[in-house]
Picture 1 (tube, rainbow, N blue to C red):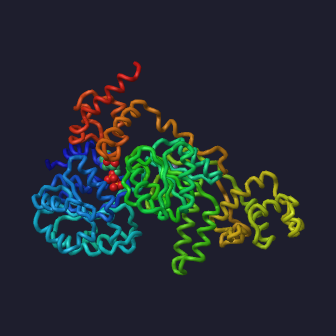
Picture 2: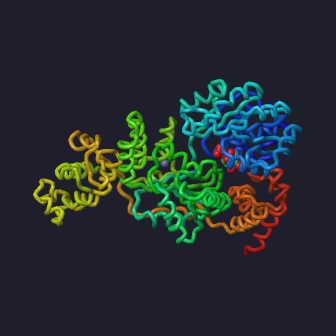
Picture 3: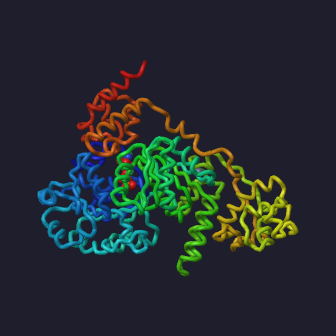
Length: 589
Ligand code: ADP
Ligand code: ZN
């Protein structure tokens, strides 16, 4: 079997290539070196797995994480490919090596440290190699965010064997891409970059107001698996606890937990269809779970890149998924403080720019996706139709005057007081603190109208985010560089009118309750338990939904559905048909 389309259908169960997959596979089949930059969820693994099946010999896959390898081997095997890995955890070294030498492996996964040993080189001499696939290729570059020195030692191995090489990564800016090409010896024309858009992810950005209830509402609205990223370990523990109160299965993951606990929580998450993980950003790298239905951030991530990567873990299966960012002005205040005190001088400028980009994103009243894609150098349409601001465009309001009043109040009170006190001064309230500081005699005392007072908090949030105000560790507000232009420079401040209604209602319609699908999920759970694999390894949600919708009655009909390849048809086909029959039997006509 060497026709790529045939293999796509028979082995993977897909009717067509997605995005640039076809181009990448074409190049690889033609024996040319390639660097594929494809966002998470775009289907990178198929780009080397399919040629690995089509070509004679074994595809050597260099991959940085053992956990990831095991997952890949399992999924590949499930699709009927002959796959194995050589790692410190493998207990079948002898057999794997024999299989390889006999030409009995499509895929052999190995870490860069092992790939570059003499012993491994000698092993490779003994059989035919179809392809080198270098996964997470940004690790080869010092510019990438995850440099792994061993990747730098791969070049001689690649040159020696001369099989075509395919490097893959989801995150590489221009400089990193150029570096990967040089380091791995790939011609410039071999670069293929897929679009960064993840159309199935719906972005929402809302100010925090009662975070526990916001998160609980979110967890109730979404049945599937989710991750809540928390800024601290303590908060991750707390959030896990709060989510449990809603009846959801939840766990925590952060570096403060003992390794076995962490490991167990991670495994439970991967295996489950509905667990919510409250985690620090330590969680997620190397977790290849396609059916994560929502990602929430309890605080502002440190950059758009980080935000994009973390939210990218939602909906890798292409099904609808959501990203929720809950932000507060304190996040920016804290981050700015950290930059000024802890970051080395030379990096501060860059870090400030990162934070400002993040601030512009959360503050925006325009399409979120457009902002993200522009950030990555794309030229997207102005309206995506699948983010909070597109679905429900927020009215904007010119708050320049309120901002000027707030800035004046901060200035007149010597830039030491928090927003609550400043609001009291502007409102003309004679509190003890106001009187004792003599603030009732200031020119700004009582100058704000009632409707302006209601806007002080969102205005303060906006001024903090854009670095017009800075908060000290007691919340005392002083001017940042962006204050003067607003106070005296004629610059306007326009914000989205703060939302009154609360998070996450719309979703019930997006995930209609489908008893057929639920029944098939139950069937899948049984199979998965029996086989000791996560449910998505058996079939993806999208496949089960399609089965529930079309109710196939024969194996031939079943084989037409996306995600049903020959191997799975043989293995699960009749059992699944039986499950379909049972839905009908149990559903009143
Ligand atoms: P990546 O490694 O790029 O994040 P994966 O290789 O894990 O992505 O694939 C993401 C998901 O897309 C997987 O669930 C995979 O089965 C699915 N997929 C890949 N290629 C196709 C295709 N051509 N048609 C439909 N689904 C696909
Ligand atoms: Zn949009």
